[in-house]
Amino acid sequence: MATTSFADLKRSRSELTNNLVEELNKLNTKNSYVEDESKYWELQVDKSFNGSAVIRFLSSPEGEDKPFIRYWEHGFQGPPKGDQKGMWYIEKSLTTLKLDDPCAEYNMKLWETGLTKNQEIVRKQKRKLYYVSNIYVIRDGVNPENEGKVFLFKYGKKIFDKINDQMNPAFDDMVAVNPFDLWEGANFKLRAMKVDGYRNYDKSEFDKPSALLDDDDELEKVWKAEHSLEGIIAPSKFKSYDELKKRLYKVLRVDSSLPLSTSDEPREKAPKPTKLEVNDNPPWVDPDDDDSNETNFFQKFKEEE
Image (cartoon, rainbow, N blue to C red; front, side, top):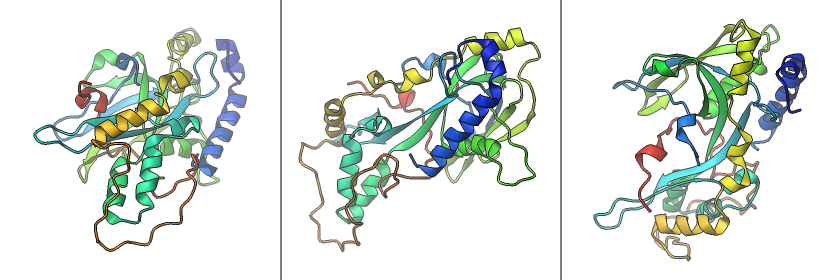
């Protein structure tokens, strides 16, 4: 149910929470361009890769029925050529829209050769799962000018699992909390540290439930400042199959024929060929995708075309 007024949002919170729990349960049973980066907030870390902030996940934007969207993305660097560094392939996967995707198909074929070399390539090129929500920044020690403002926040499965745990507690004596609720949700203490060379958010946690702000008029201003989520995964925001295939082969520096290895290395037992299903998790996609390789590809590695 899409909310169309602030009063409707407050009145229908119980129903919205139930609908959200149902949506989360669907995701639990089915493994089912950043246009304007200024809309996005990102946690800044120090030289030791540690950082912390306090944010609040916000409710569904006006006219939309979910407080989050998710999409799959491929992000990897292709092979170098001579003195040239490898180009980057950073694209939303069409599997998000339940459509065929050239990189997913390419990975499937490589994996099914059973060759260790090819399967290692697949592990590097597998799709990653991301979520986006609107957030309200409560504390940002590095950039205090962000405090009190609404941003989009891109995050991975580890943080999403913490949200899910709040809404679907593991034990009967735990009270379910909808972190997206403006009145009875909870602030999120986002904490990052470096573990085994990667950014880790395990120390992050939700605070006790409380209203984001005490004044409904101020809460309504926050709600109306939210950004559209559905627009992020609109079909127009994805490249076509042919465009992605052209880009993929340019990054991989190969022609249209699949570069399968013909070496004599021992073959591992290949998995039974399967039709790629978006909501399945075959070996060429990772069901435990998290934030471990959360590099800001868009700013750091976007090479000139």
